[in-house]
Amino acid sequence: MSTVPTEFERTEIGEIQIAPEVIEVIAGLATVEVPGVAGMSGGFAGGVAELLGRKNLSKGVKVEVGQREAAVDVSVIIEYGNRLPEVAAAIQHNVKRSIENMTGLNVVEVNVQIHDVQFKSAEKVEEPEVLGAGRVK
Image (cartoon, rainbow, N blue to C red; front, side, top):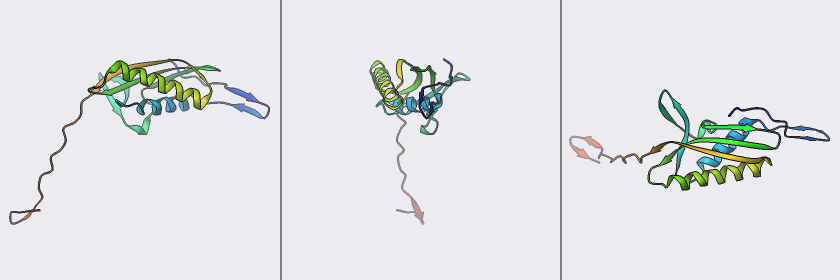
């Protein structure tokens, strides 16, 4: 899908335009709000899915915007142990609802690509601090 500028609405005092990047950010935020989503995936650049943080939420999101409709693709990484179809359906619902509520655009499709599953990292065990002369804090 390509990202194209949209002519959304014309009023008596001017034109209202919503940049596709705004819709990408809305979709990214709506995606990471869903329980079970570990993060957004930038795709398979160099054969490896890149886990991205909240700072760049438009990564892993592609939109196609018309004058009244939008189609969205999101690429995600899911936390291990979650039912993938359930998380994907929740993403679709949340993205559609968020974009429609915030922009007034009709979302015709939300495609979810699951690129990876993230396993919980082993928790670090704190080692006692040695104060000197063999004393432990």
